[in-house]
Length: 79
View 1 (cartoon, helix red, strand yellow):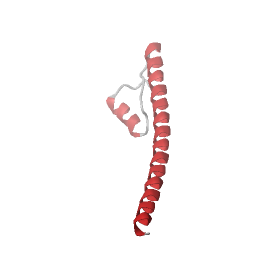
View 2 (tube, helix red, strand yellow):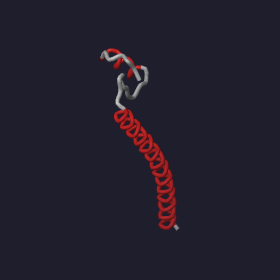
View 3 (cartoon, one colour):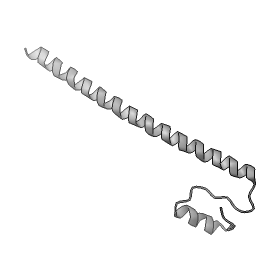
View 4 (spheres, helix red, strand yellow):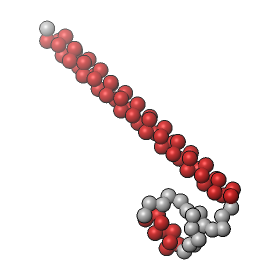
């Protein structure tokens, strides 16, 4: 939260890691809406990380399966 309203100050905040800003005076409804949005974004990030982990595990299982199938097919034709 800041009393600074200059665009330069806003940009500087983003450069050092801010993801949002609210200027004073603020409205409670706006603050609550921004909080809800950031909570939603955090939840979506968590879900995305979980889904990516599951996808990586599925890809590893698929690769192992195809490796076994390929090996078995090669051996079936050579014996």
